[in-house]
Length: 95
Image (cartoon, rainbow, N blue to C red; front, side, top):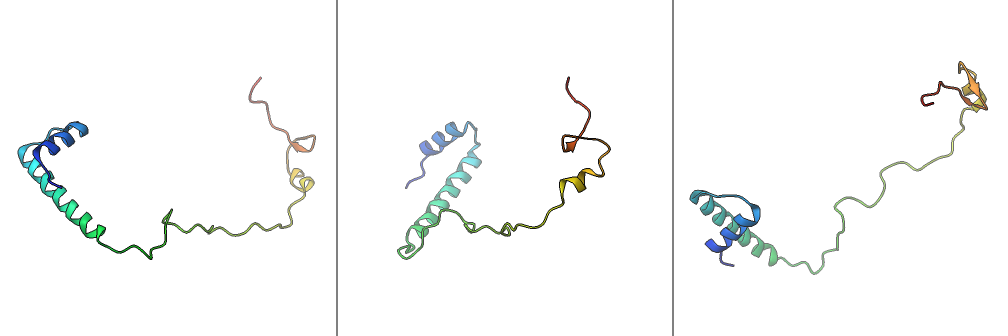
């Protein structure tokens, strides 16, 4: 692909930026370099490559849930200054 001044003008317009002549030449050079790299990647054989939808492992790294004995509600509420209907009683925040 040829990187023309017209293409640089179009990209400049789409990005809503203004480039100096020096910057235009630098962008043109970098785009040519990028396209050459893409040609190298295009030539790589990917016939046996496995498809990938995400770079991270699909398996959870967290431990499995295990049922363990818990503290009884009565024991927890025994330290509360005030309880109501088996729950902690707190002052109203809304009227």
